[in-house]
Image 1 (cartoon, rainbow, N blue to C red):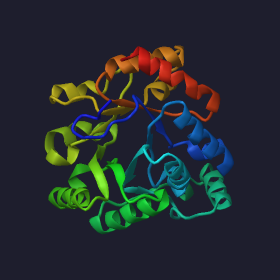
Image 2: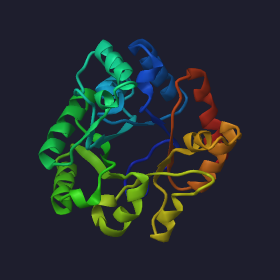
Image 3: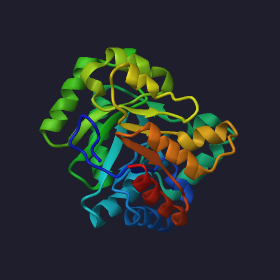
Image 4: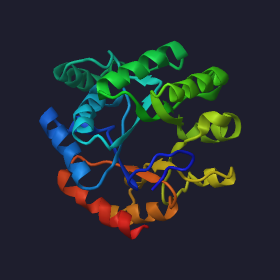
Amino acid sequence: MRIAGTDLRCSRFIFGTASLFNVGTRRRRLALLHAAVHQGFTHFDTAPYYGFGQAERDLAEVCRAYPTITVTSKVGIYAPGGEHQSYGSILVRKAAGRVFSAIARPSRDYELRSARESLEATLRRLGRERVDLYLLHEPVLDRLHLDEWRRWLEQSVTTGKIRAFGVAPAADQVETFLRDAGPLTAVLQVQDSVDRREADLLVRYGREFQITYGYISAAMSRDQARPALAILKNALERNRSGAIIVSTGDPHRLGQYAPIAEHGR
């Protein structure tokens, strides 16, 4: 399927790497990513903050092995201590962060100078010349210089460093961006759930569903005793035109997604 507003085609389910580091060693993480490709995932969602930069570096090997897969990365939220820490250092920081939350708290920076450096660093970590979809990561609208961001992102498309761009806003910022951000919101990645239907806001603004996420975690957080497969089927019924981010640390579960996606066509 094609993401509305772009020429980007991808699988109905996108593999999210926010929790990839928790899978364990690099060998296990790469095995999971390779298995995801073999089970039909053609698009991967990542960010500099995920795994303190490790998620992007892990994806580099998969990108080399399967050049046709596509990738979303993001800009604006960064790992505490930077994105070049060792595996051991990351483990220590994450463990310490359970006691002293500031140690593991990400930093946020939406200045264009930082964004330019971040894009170049993402490309290096991914081992690619272009990011297929580049999203502002949970920005606050009134802290952005919209025209400057738009010009830079459009220039980055022209120079071939990104293919398409948009915003991944926090839930409380979605309507603000829909109302006021104009071309910056060419693509919107938004949280949704089967019961609260947060993404219906898109319809009120005449927008198609593009990329949604959060269905399983929402059900778990509200103690809804429903099978994951049933939730995902309902998610596909809600998001009929776009793609849905999912994740798992268990390679054996990857085979469940393709049949659901086929059923939801």
